[in-house]
Image: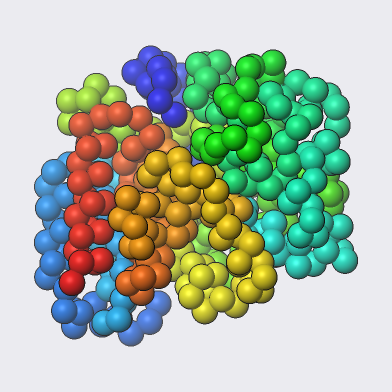
Length: 397
């Protein structure tokens, strides 16, 4: 989401005045810590608290942070979930987790592989061409559409352009900011485009890949991917504060999302510009407690997937600095060597989130920030400083 930001948001502000919003003003109804909170006893309590307040002062509107390490679990928050109504950003605030949705989608694929008797998808399906499931009306028009596999889509090795980098995409979103987009409507935007590279030559992140994954799951099972997500993951794991826009009603405590339109440290509310949510690559909203519960069971307790599935999922390809991609999972901060994190990040127009397990240090991070860092701004640099300082604080002795 890098192009035409100023034009896009200016037009959005004009258009949304007459369109029905999906996110109303936030109510102060967020849940408290769902266990006996010992954050005040954590040896880095003061340092974590100072970190949050520092970056609130630097301009980030609201932050909730959860860190789990050998000393236990620390949670805290600061700032506002709704600046206009002065609603505090609570520890249990629900906010958009953007591309962390892809980690859920990747996990869903492996859950369906493990249920191959009912889904018809097995481990070998990762190497099958997408033409096995998708009709020629799609694959004939997709760049590399007749060549790529399901697994290459999950590992961003397809060479398919990223739909959200297209000006045409933003202009279409602006014409209907709260539209519920179908997958094929989004794919039409990149039909006939030249591929970025030959399949398997390298890895470059593209949201289009996960749109294709969602279509494959639907074609294989005859069920909507949003229903599969709930059937295999959200309901069995009791992730009660995780919601999928636009299929679920978002709760009253959903945080507003903000962006620095003019890059002058004056932020505007962009909560209700829906950037194609609900097509596999984004759209989930959650809180840090559900996120921690998910990654803890996926990568630490290892109770969601079998070891075979996890080993396959964490087969990483060529680097796309600072990331490497497994099957629906991201290794990030690879410049830190063995201290890289595994999980996924999320960046959207008005929201940012991280969910990572740093195995070498036994540390887990989950945080939500209601400020968009998918586009460039002064506050994006502030956010990156926050992220780096958090890494240094938790990963260094």
